[in-house]
Image (cartoon, rainbow, N blue to C red; front, side, top):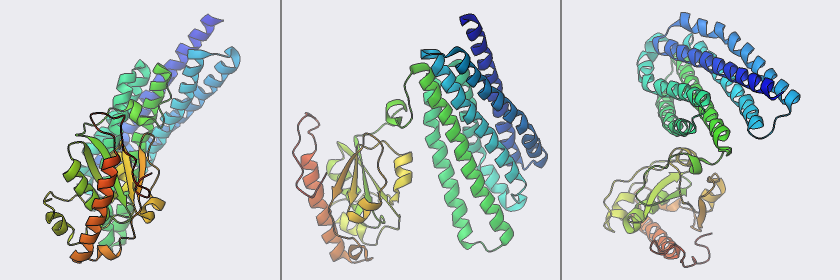
Length: 383
């Protein structure tokens, strides 16, 4: 009985490898069709998707048959669970390859030619993730799987940048034909991001297969950490005009030897005029980084040790941080009055209020030389 099961498991592995190779080939051709505006190649991708669907159904049926017939346990059961999950991820990659191929017919060749060229680097990284995840699966290489997982962040950044560029053009474009093409570009960027996400999911399943550890929602435990000069803290306000840029600049100036502060906002706006001037009055002349969308910052620039919400409006709308991030709240009044461009008196008051909260919070943080010791923050300053 065991010999039959081992033979069938090996055959199942071969089917998964075949599906991975087929999906990888289709993804490569769809991205090439996109970059080269090759409508004929795009049609071939769409036609060949039937083979992907057929093999995906066969693999699922085989997984269910083996589970029912042999009732596997331990490593064998884990392999079948992973096979079912990866089978689904591969099928979705195949579907997205078809979706991208369909957009080839909708993108106008003139306005999108330059955009296609700019996509070359992004599509290469996505294809590397798809190929790498398939290789990690076949070879059961959890180290490669971790590297593939880490690549997803770079793809997300590229897709976000492309989305911003397209949206900036959409704001002023009036030609219906060009608008349709731009909408198709946004769809392609979303599809590229999803391709990378499915490759990342395969990588996570490879980690589970090899290590027996469920890697989902545990990026800090498995994904390589980015180098940092100190403990990272994210300041979040409602609009990014005053509070979060001020708080980040003050923190980096006063505690830059042990903290690295980043600013974010729920609905990012432009830094208010006068913020740089009131900072220069305290001896801070470093360039201010505009606050970015907190959802994107948490996803692309983590992990953070602390997330500090500046005011009730920010706290109510701020997304929950990942596991391992400590939430802190500073009970600040609404910043709308202080955000009046050029109102230096109000901006100075805001700076002083932030300085008081920062001093109290820093005093309550653990001593870097003795992390076990700390002073409790005053009421209303942190949580």
